[in-house]
Amino acid sequence: MGQHAGGPWILAAALALLPALAWAQGGNKLGYVDMKRLLDNAPQVQAGRDRLQQEFNARDAALKVDEARLAELKKVFERDGALLSKADADTRKREIDALERSVRRTREELRAELKTRSDQELDKSWQAINNAVVEYAREQGLDLVVPSPVVYADPRIDITDRVLDRLRRNYQSHQAKQP
Image (cartoon, rainbow, N blue to C red):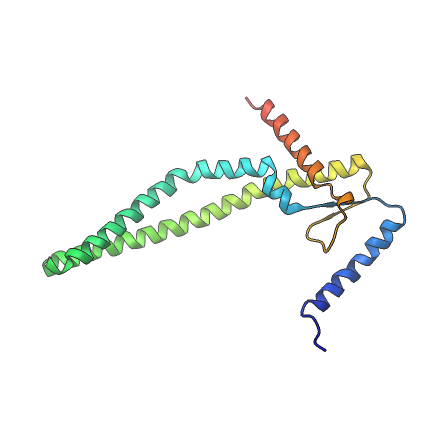
């Protein structure tokens, strides 16, 4: 008989949860929160995405213009290159190579800067999300909140929608205070 490939992992996860389950049966209150849903739907996260889009739109558009120019230069060179003198062909080839390096470098720099800024925005949102979960748990008298991923969580203890509502209210309140 073959053993299921995930068997040891599933067994380890179940054993790790046993103390929490025994603890919960002792009358303690548990909550579960789907962090991915919060990160996907929290207005704080969406606002961060919008800020990044505004911040990088112009540079992304400029990169696309350079990429289109490069594609056009390559197309013209492939079509007309054989008709050019050796000197003109070499000049065009150097121009294409230089633009190609510039596009590649710009793309890599843009990607790296976007990654850094995305991480910064996510860190800010993560703190707001974490605070909302903690505030809700304290107000509701929860003793433990388990974040996703988990093997199973009964919908009765899923507090994700209530925390998401709190995040929305907090965001609207914060926006109302902005000048």
